Length: 182
Image (cartoon, rainbow, N blue to C red; front, side, top):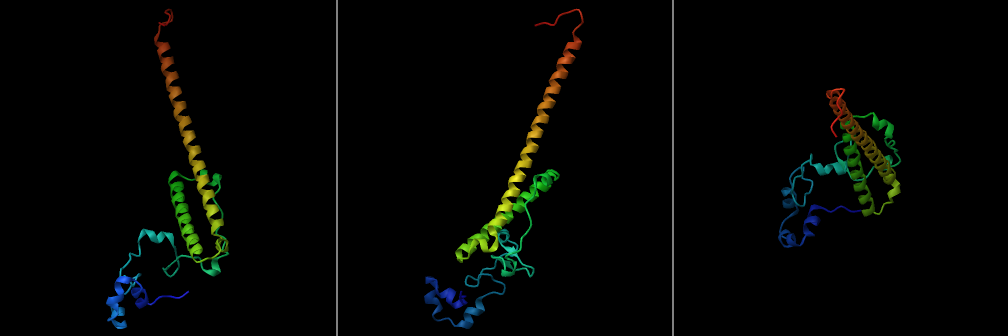
């Protein structure tokens, strides 16, 4: 895999070929600002942009699209069990859902990059990690559905108790010798 120099990258675009023919290498290098991530376009990119969440951040602060070779066989844990999720608060489950969703997006980015570079997908366990994320997300949905059904049942039970209390109060207000009007 070869990397393009700034001159090669700029001269490959049709609009810049004629204008760059008279410009020296020193002038091309002088126009590139320090820290520009796309030197051919001389555009600075915000390092805190939300799209960086699709890439893993290394310890030195750089973003990588693929797992390093020494971490390929790093098994990163297991999916969450439903019993564990039942003990969590709604806020914790909500947070875990979005963390898992972000991880799935990251893995999808890695899978697309591997396909682009013709690397086998099973080489980095991307499919296994994605499966664990999907299982966790399915279990989160299961737990939230259980909570919704329990809430609906409690609301229905409360409504029935209110109705029986109203009926008993109505029957108490009728004197003993009189029949209820029907």
